[in-house]
Length: 286
Image (cartoon, rainbow, N blue to C red; front, side, top):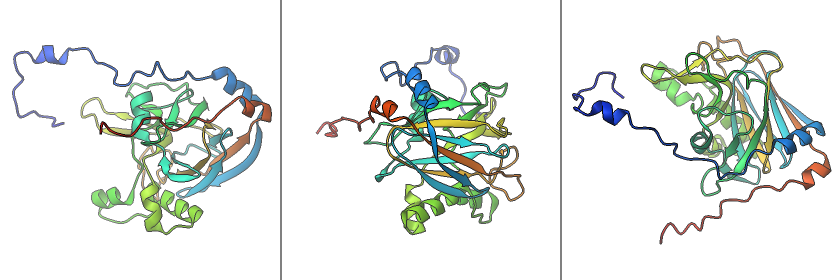
């Protein structure tokens, strides 16, 4: 949007602007977040795997359906860029745009991470978030956004005129290629828009530009997910550290992120069923 319009406001401009907004995707018909079930399952879980994601790098990890996983700021404030794939079909992956449309610009406990079309089902549910106290700050900022796409070497080259190879996009590409036994060129198209874990972001009030500020996360903070399907996950420890200054930098202080995968009791797993893919006929009116 241009800051200075080229056209004069019409006589009824105020009236046009004053109409009430309408929520595009009311979610009252979606299954409610089953807090009692998840609380029960969380109390009976056992740690089965730990992965440490090194600063300015990425790692993949697997989470079977019905398991929990946590992303932990193990040593200090650190933003992470998260990708999710169906472990049995890389073509099904996290759809940040639809997740944003359904749950808002920032997500927390009770929100689901949805997969792309034509699959359109929950891949993971957020079950606990130690930063849920943050809410919205005076700048309109919040934590864990599905606005930003991920820092990438293409935009960095466009804006800064030089190549940088530890942007989250490149980190995730390398990690997926290594995990799946693919070339970089074959793996790159599967890397997709992310959930920016621990990142504090919003839009400026005047120009409505995407902004970031220092993450409020501290050592020990974590966000926890329940895997609704078998997942292959990719997590990049952003080269911007807490993103207080830059999100593609060798100067920012960066910390590792720790991933913890938990198994629930067999009795809890028996009570749960994975969601099916969308049942839309896909005839598209033909």
